[in-house]
Image (cartoon, rainbow, N blue to C red; front, side):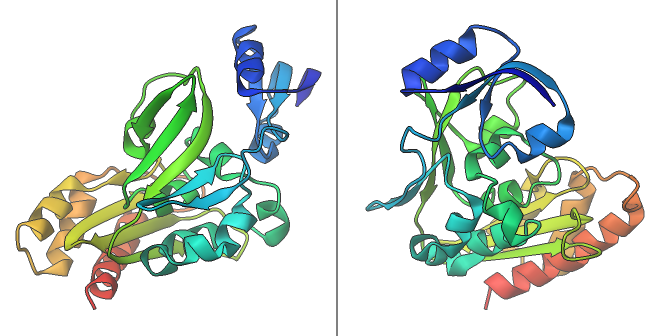
Length: 260
């Protein structure tokens, strides 16, 4: 990675104006994947002094600053109470502790990485992203947004709810990328089913969710609907067929678990 200038922003407006100054300027979060991708930048903009590293427990939601590290997220007592700890567990599955001490929640989301455990782990819930300048959209809307988001992610709002979540990452070794990852929730009686690392970015299966939320009880059938609706591909880590088989097994198990 080649960088011409490192810039520490004094405010969100300062950071935003610097970001607009050149299409080759970029926000620095943890910087881990940015370094790995090896691109060149005119300026990288550091948000570390803007107070975006806090987790707040509000009445109806938990607000996670975009610069909160994955390690702080997984260890947060506030987060641990969300959906039987499923979102925290999903983040705990990312690489090793040293990595999670640096990687941020906001950076993981903004990258829209197809292998992201963070995105898969949050997508079964009502999650809203807050940007600067003032703009909000759901996590799912952001994942479907075409092109580069010309704004700064400030916070992740996770709505509270009564229910339970499940997350499964299938990997060869503890530090590997996922072959596939699965997240399932049942909140206020409503099911949500998410499959990521297909190897495309995580997505909800609306066919499976419609079947379940209209009274369907056959979890194996719901899993079949999920793999029929979502696309799977081969890559160096796994075949398409193996991913499909894994997804069917763990969607079914996830549904069984959240239904207990």
